[in-house]
Image 1 (cartoon, rainbow, N blue to C red):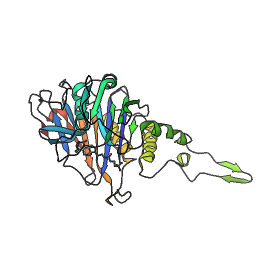
Image 2 (cartoon, protein in one colour):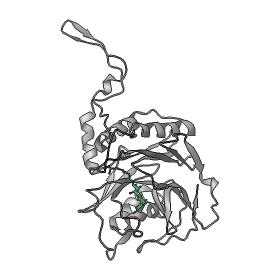
Image 3 (cartoon, rainbow, N blue to C red):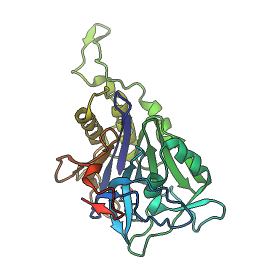
Image 4 (tube, protein in one colour):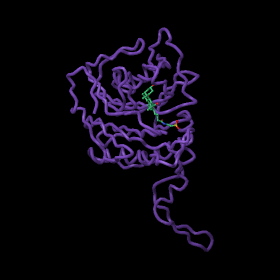
Length: 314
Ligand SMILES: C[C@H](CCC(=O)NCCS(=O)(=O)O)[C@H]1CC[C@H]2[C@@H]3[C@H](O)C[C@@H]4C[C@H](O)CC[C@]4(C)[C@H]3C[C@H](O)[C@]12C
């Protein structure tokens, strides 16, 4: 399972991050794609040369991003969506064709805002073409965010769906509208301290703080994580400064993190939060912590050579 979140700090700077929950890693690193990198889209898309930083792997000199952000403060993450995602089998004439594997790269190379992405997606086909035989097509949906808002992009049997994500979180299956509607089941949950009540002759006092959120789902399934991270994101108080906002990002994501042993996949292997990563548009820094080493490592864009045309990893 995976979970993602977006929020802005008190000055309106974007913070965006995700948990990558899986049974194994892919050798992912921080990958920097400079503006002058020779990106050759899989089909007829045009490269608009935004520099990109994110987490991914490099295959055939192409950065395959799990999540990334660009120099304009636009960020995107891919999350599993099997059983629902259904890409086109081939390119479609008179539309912009984007291979599923390049979707985050294409978004971040091409656009400066969520509004522009949403407009472009009106005429986009996502094609289920693998980059090569070693890496089959992943069935994903994506959350795209900037300092103003976020959207969820789902490509299913009925085509392209772009949803306004007014709670600024995403997890896995099912479709975004189901997650969004399910939140109504939890609107009784609040962070307020519960007052003592009388039931007949008895005075009932709360155990302590937290009782007002009783019923918030604690299990690792996708719908439960959506509720939990939406609750955490909605109630986290505004923070000043980079440090407290990065803490907010990682703590909010930890509310939906997967602990090894809690959830086995179909093959019997346990899922765990392999890494948590995120971007601060305030300082143009990518942050990452792994399951085995929770130290949050900061990689500012300035660590890379922006004048080069080569992919760079750290
Ligand atoms: C496994 C990852 C998603 C994690 C997730 O959402 N888990 C949910 C588990 S469950 O089903 O809901 O149980 C996804 C997110 C991004 C994916 C990667 C990126 O799309 C980049 C390439 C794309 C290639 O086609 C396949 C390898 C790959 C390197 C992908 C491997 C894998 O599918 C990743 C790493």
